[in-house]
Image 1 (cartoon, rainbow, N blue to C red):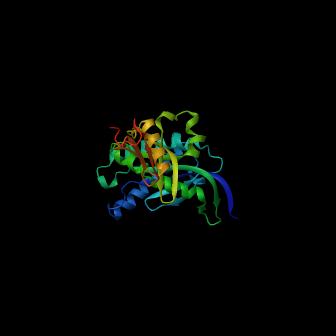
Image 2: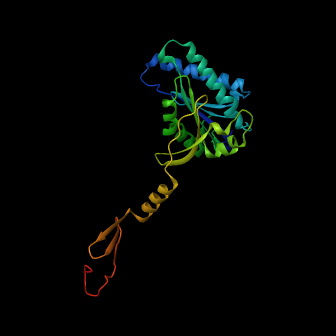
Image 3: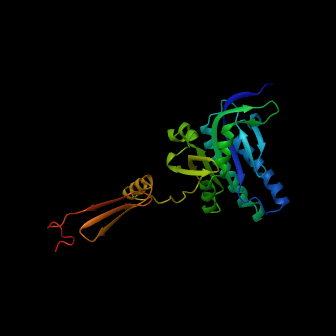
Length: 255
């Protein structure tokens, strides 16, 4: 089998705060997550065995089979996973084996290697989505009863959520922007069962003023000088001085 390039949907899942729980809990939680994710696939009518599954240490990366309907990875898959994790956490008595996860979704042209691994730029983007600060912040700030945060690429959102397919509510998603390492992107955040508070937006007028000032290299200062003049100074820029003529020629103070 030769390496082949195909358009595929890719999913990544990572356990929140997995370090520091000890090796026994780590191994148990990895096994639990794999079992619950597999069950979520089965409940969603998706072929788990046809997926390419790769270990991320405290999570998994799953490349869906060719032809998988991308919207099904949002609903019912992510919602089924959230329900299964919620049931698991309700049953477990040990804090170390309670599981909450960050998930990320993207799609693009990837290379399926003969030995099994999948490579390509879409997987690099997926890794940044999984580690993005907005996803971490949303899950950390959510009630403990909320076990999943989902961050998807703009491309994935455009082809799934925005259409309002059955079970997918566009109003439950909101746009975020982030920069991580060399990667900067807009993405869409969803926390099933909870709506995180939105970041306050600056008034349009003030935002436009700040943007213009930054473009000019600094903020403009206006000072009045004696002699009926006005001094306009721009930080890190040129200084422009306008002197208004007084009522009588040769008189600096107008007296």
